[in-house]
Length: 230
Image (cartoon, rainbow, N blue to C red; front, side, top):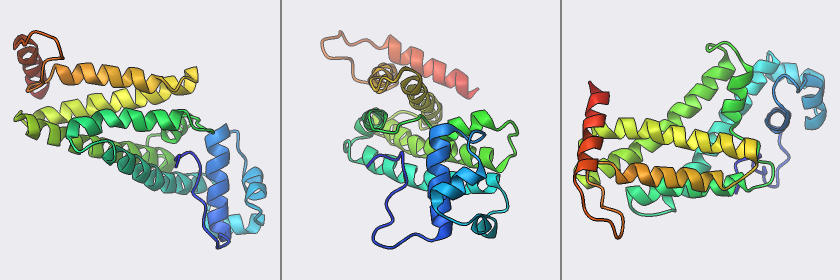
């Protein structure tokens, strides 16, 4: 299932709060925060304007709540999809880009809702920016776990996992941004190829098939990572 839209609530009719959250997320993800007014959200939700103020003190509070809910759903989707891609840390790390490609090719893909929201909100202390930042921290944490497992499997110092995780997050967010702008789901494959090349330079990496084994690349990568730790 794509994380682009809220999941169906089953047979039960969602209450006004849930309908407002559904409407806010869908409209803002498609059109942006500033371009989406409260009236449009209330109308889409089929709710009374009074119910909006019963549950939320402002439009920004509604947006922050909708993003927080999306964070839970998106992370669950991404983690579950990644873990299904393989038993080894390397397979899971590379599999992240296969999961992303499915999302990029899905109907209604409009990029990362959290990056989009951050681009519209100037203050880093705004609740909307806080939710976006927390989402990226959660994503980084999951990537870090997989990088740590990879370093352990290769017998490399765990400290290398931190730098690799940050580089991996840049590849993920870069792929999302390129897919949004270009409309090309294969941005995920390009990012995966770059990720594969990065893994091949790390300590303990197996030489590419058909290549002559060589130690200097791993040594250079180790020295580079050690400099990052200084």
